[in-house]
Amino acid sequence: MSVPETQTKPRFPVSRESHSTIDKVFDCAIHTVRRSRELVWELKELAIAVLILYLLLKHAWHLF
Image 1 (cartoon, rainbow, N blue to C red):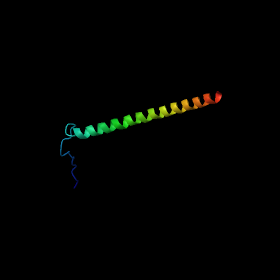
Image 2: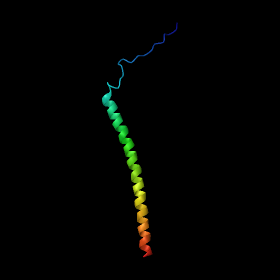
Image 3: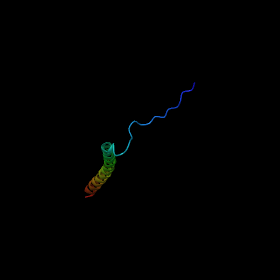
Image 4: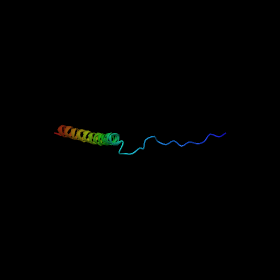
């Protein structure tokens, strides 16, 4: 006797409209993560620029 193969069907049809709130939350979370990565990168660049400016001013102060 062989066991008949059964195909599982979802009990409820899955559609984007039925989960619109969850999709909005995930979209917002993804946007937040991407934007925070961009802000962290810009903060690193700003910190490096401030450090270079500080070192240049310190060097110029020692020259005079």
